[in-house]
Length: 256
Length: 263
Image (cartoon, rainbow over all chains, first blue to last red; front, side, top):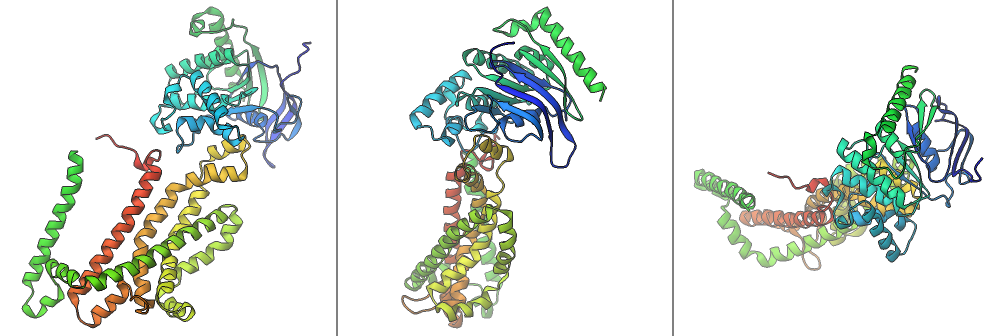
């Protein structure tokens, strides 16, 4: 056993909405600090619900869920959510959008600006601070959304299919950028995706889920070397893992 | 540049054509009926002759329109904020807003005169009543129509209720608010005119345009009556132009309705 206590811990967690059927059933999952965990599975397997539970946007029905040893939705847990859509405020320019989470927590203006500049540099948009969201491409909007999430220096980063709507080239570039940001910071990530290649490239661990009700079907450790760059996509171990995860995903989808 | 020129020349040509048709009709009328349709020249002349009276009437009507419009903006915004807080409040108040809108001003005017007397106060209240409904309906709709994802984002960052209203609900409502404002800006001068027509007074510093219309009509001064109509139109144009400018200032940087189209 490691001495470190998990940063996120699910124990026999169940979730249903109202009187409806179980969305999640018997979820046991412990994440160590610094892990990058991808959640993959057929639609309706509850992977997005799982993120929402961690975020405190939704509450568990049964079992226990601890974030840093506490109940979710406590002020102290610093976590950030990157949604499927960039969810930027269209009436604010990039700078003000990135500063929003700090503004909501009454961070002083000078500190806000410093954090904002640092975050925009991380996503290579330092020179677009005055642009409005509608002037940006899909990939740039997503970068702004990620920069916004990073300004609060989160311990846990929750990403719900953030690159799903982007073209393949942009997606691969942003995958690489996300990893290089992670090398400079130290958050634990939960990443929902439909792309096996993306999951293998980014993760330290992949959770394959099955649907009706949502359960954890398989766990695959991804022990590819770090830091990772795009070249890794050409290596044998990477390709073997992609094949393995694809096979597991197919078996889950066929058995439902 | 070419586009800007087209935008000026095309309406100008339409205007010229309409005036030409106007003169043609007038020319076709027999001498006995020429009084029915004064020429634009006669109308401008009469405007010049009656300017001391009409100018004061414009001033009085503008005052009534501005106060009524302003009051409607303030009260409707506050009420919309209140109604946006809960669907129960909306359900409770909506029927009465409808009734307020349905009340015929023509019948309400004598009651108003009874309550507050004829003159500016009555004109302001009638303008207020006419402008109020489109404003409150649009603004309320705007306040409750914020993007669900953005609402979730605010919840996620544990924004307070007041932060959510100030930083999310109100900016999201702006395009709706301006839609209501545009409708109300068209209605405000008409409201003040109707108010003046039904509940105006020559007491104090004289009546407004509606009051003046009654006088010209009874004196059979038809060119002056046409001049009154023209001045009312211009007043309406000014109201709409100001509101369109404000709307542009508030929205052009970010809202899709001001998206530049490449052509």
